Amino acid sequence: MSTPARLPQRDLAIILGLLTLLLFASPLTAWWAGMTLPWYTPYALWGLLVLLGAWVVRRKRRDEP
Image (tube, rainbow, N blue to C red):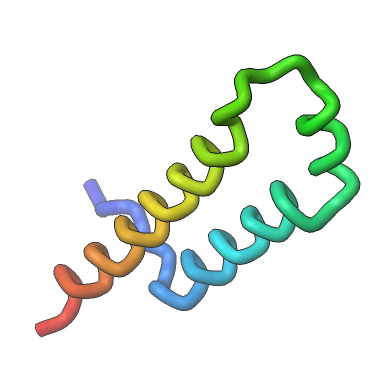
């Protein structure tokens, strides 16, 4: 069995950046901000993006020789 190909580091960073733009700088922002969500929702979303960014950096360190 072959192992699945992993996305290059740069691709993951671009995907994370596009996800950030989608969540915080698009018309989608008005949609989720208008919902009756808890007050900490924007902080939770930012925290999720920070954790994903840390995962990307950690993955990069593990792949380096």
